[in-house]
Image (cartoon, rainbow, N blue to C red; front, side, top):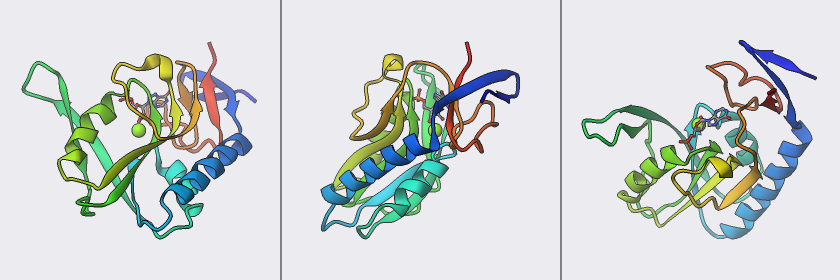
Length: 177
Ligand code: IMP
Ligand code: MG
């Protein structure tokens, strides 16, 4: 059924069952890949809160989770915005880190954040993203665990927002063109 979020209409795209099945698969792969390890999941707020919660419940190995916000501000250099992490309390040094993102769009956010994290010398660093808009790529990011590759169209729901709204929709909906 069609849904209105602020001034835009959205149509169903990925159902609860679709999302759940994709998360089951990702979690099973992570459980196998990290067998014998104690990974640290770092979920990027706000968008990934629902995904991180559902994924983490399916992780069966000993694991920690921490939540951060990435704030962009205008840098002093001509390169434009700079991303900084707020709220990372856990020590990343020599940890097996898994970044949890709702969606990778242009790749800009992660392409700025990952090198900063690498400075803290994690033992390993992998990316888990529920959605990837491959056609929108401007900054290529290697996604190690991915739910769905989606077309370059705006989506809301399951934590993803349109101007702050729509995060509470329990499925993923695509903008109606
Ligand atoms: P990137 O830096 O261009 O990869 O953008 C990543 C961020 O933009 C995501 O973490 C989302 O917060 C936001 N974003 C990108 N595409 C969408 C979308 O279709 N719906 C909602 N948020 C989006
Ligand atoms: Mg996000």
